[in-house]
Image (cartoon, rainbow, N blue to C red; front, side, top):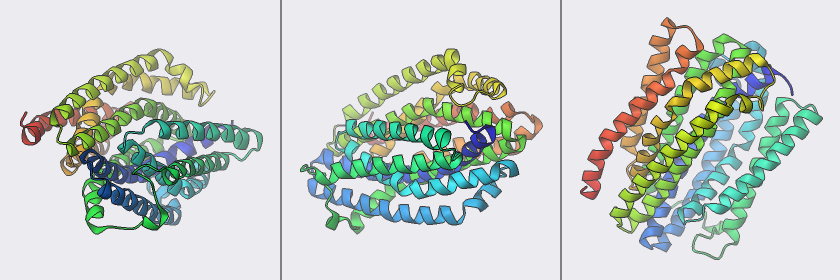
Length: 402
């Protein structure tokens, strides 16, 4: 409704947002593993401590990242080379989004706690409700009130706040063992260190992957607003494929954490095989949908035919390779559920981040086209999957004697 510059502005901000959220998602994953292991072992006392430590850590990180984001908002956008015609609106959208960060983190940590004890339905319901609110407010603020990208930012802020309130209400009102009590939200050194040991490497992994995407975005930015807009739409559609795979990563992490705590190692291996089969099936199915319906999905974002054509071209280019990332998601989740997060972080940093940055820095300049940059994605997916397959065989022998 407000043109390709606004679309490019939101798209240029997305990798930065993903980098910050990715860091916290790693921390929340660490918290979820610790909670799931205590839950599986039946140690409810330590589980309660882990839950309250997690909430305390969320509040601290949320405040710190919000302040850092607001202070360095414009310098970050300048550092990644956002064009001048896009800069102002990108700055507006990003600064509003930073205010919603703490709500994003509270929801994600709260839903992670619920998933750790086997409740994955209510986080979904909360997210569906807040997403509908977000969409309604997007139309209201952007189309009807004419707020532009600021309207999109405010819609997200309100929707994220609602999701955070709902998940915390459930956690505080429940009478089950995972109930959150305000006076108990404090740090316990032993539990905190356990969460950080698993969560910090995972957080760095997510952030560095997002940082590599920021670097890729900086190479895309030189092509101007139209190309940025087309690439931005492609990345959003790409997320529809990757997010379900990440969901199975979270599912297998929780499943393995509970069974590892209960010493049910056979179930861990069966769970990993099943999750991998489901993820592969889903990746292939979604790729087929994109192959035949990608152009229709693109039209939800823009009516500009040039953007639609460019986006469809990139989708068809990436579509055959999505299956290759399944091994990374499932095997890394399995290892984290067992409490091993440092080595998966190294594999991802080497196979995705280092290789992707090296490609766009040294190889892409010799092939100065958009696809010359974007091909770095499937190359790094295949490489990292190969590394995980090799290491997982060693990991099974070491942990399960298999």
